[in-house]
Length: 245
Length: 324
Ligand SMILES: Cc1cc2nc3c(=O)[nH]c(=O)nc-3n(C[C@H](O)[C@H](O)[C@H](O)COP(=O)(O)OP(=O)(O)OC[C@H]3O[C@@H](n4cnc5c(N)ncnc54)[C@H](O)[C@@H]3O)c2cc1C
Ligand SMILES: Nc1ncnc2c1ncn2[C@@H]1O[C@H](COP(=O)(O)O)[C@@H](O)[C@H]1O
Image (cartoon, rainbow over all chains, first blue to last red; front, side):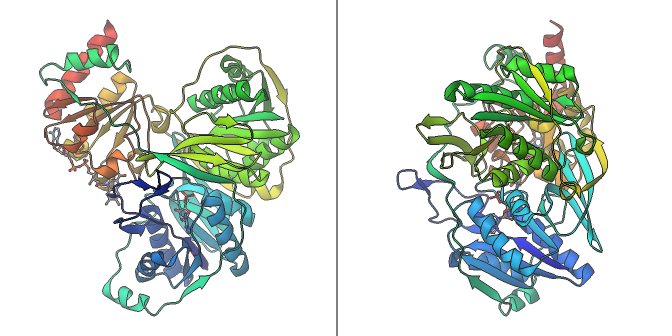
């Protein structure tokens, strides 16, 4: 079984989010980057599934060489090889086209993405990939098992969950529950250095949309503290002032 | 040229997100002068479909073929784009809900449309240029996005735009789409719905609790508070990691992002990763025994106190208020 895991490189969850150039671009100065937490889940599950089925795990990332440390970390966790499409990840449509282009030439059985990236929160790449590759895509998977060439996926739906059976190949967007993120061990870190990281040129993709400006949300006013002996006052305020009950 | 609004149903019932998308479509139609049509897929009663008119949309296309009684994103995306093509639709509006997230990119790709996912505003239109706002960096910033294509798919964030009532007469038109077998290859084996519970992404009020609750055995009071308020329950990540609560309830940067009118955080410290998923809530109430808890800095109202004392009193106070 051949598994492809799509990795997004995102600011560490504690990063202060600021912008430069008159609030037109993200300020990456001093920001620590990590594997998107959902992609870490995808990667961990991929490594487990590959071990069960004697398969292979390839990780793919669309980005510049500054992401190589993140890619090496994925190799240390257990991916067999890596591909980087050497370009700024302009937007989800661009990224999905790059990945689809690569995937078409390499016949993967299973393509995993995170449910969304924690920077642009698009949750788009997974559906775009399904469409571009003309295969089923399942978003927000909470469980993923493979039995020969069939996947059983538990998917989150409005107010519940759904168990689906689908033949490979498929694209799955993974969420919490699919696997526990794995921490690379010493051996993993050592072998990661010797694994292949192939760098490929991007294909041309038309620009359909573009972020032109960022704003930071207005800060809230000072908190109004209510005495714990007087909870009725809170109820009153929620009714008459905040008008939420 | 027209606007198509896909209205989602859950077990045959239109939900709040459907009304929000209708209201958005109507407002957009008023801006562009285009005709607005709603599309429903699945087994939705005529009575439910009548409700479309309440939000100012005059026409509904009803697709109710047997193969499509359950949500299958590939098949539904095909139907939506087929109807969009038939109607010469420029803009498709849908909810950025769990199913909407699966649909929106597929529909956009089929129509070669620009996708505005997670929209939190109506577009600003100046000639051919549309700009639209969406939350990014887990609610830490708001981006303005320019859509360059004539065709657009707009997936709106649930709870971020109010459904405005403006009643009109509705006509329902049935339609039989051409669904390809390839679109139906996914088999749904089992559906589990917690029917008695209010769905977290759609909830107006969310009662959320963290590690300060000490253990799962103490959630009865959280459930009761939620019940008296008509709220959904949520939790912090360590709580679901420890198995005190199901994963679906975990909110934050790596969990669900919610935007209710009222978010009540109990025994949650307010770590930045937690705030990322809840800070867009309209009103935030924090109950924590530690006056230094960072959550107070982003709260509108706060009570410094022990949850085990405060919550029972709060339940009583709300009951008294509701009985009045
Ligand atoms: C990559 C990454 C992603 C993460 N994603 C998320 C996420 O999506 N969501 C999330 O929630 N967290 C997330 N976290 C974890 C986050 O950093 C915090 O650890 C977590 O939110 C803390 O949960 P808590 O507030 O319940 O617990 P704690 O931080 O332990 O806080 C418990 C609070 O309860 C209060 N308390 C204790 N007893 C009482 C009492 N009797 N009455 C009232 N108050 C009491 C304490 O004063 C304290 O403030 C993430 C972390 C990382 C590294
Ligand atoms: N630059 C990228 N390179 C490779 N995969 C990506 C990239 N950006 C996003 N992805 C994948 O797509 C998923 C969803 O991203 P998004 O659509 O941006 O929310 C992520 O969890 C990744 O698996």
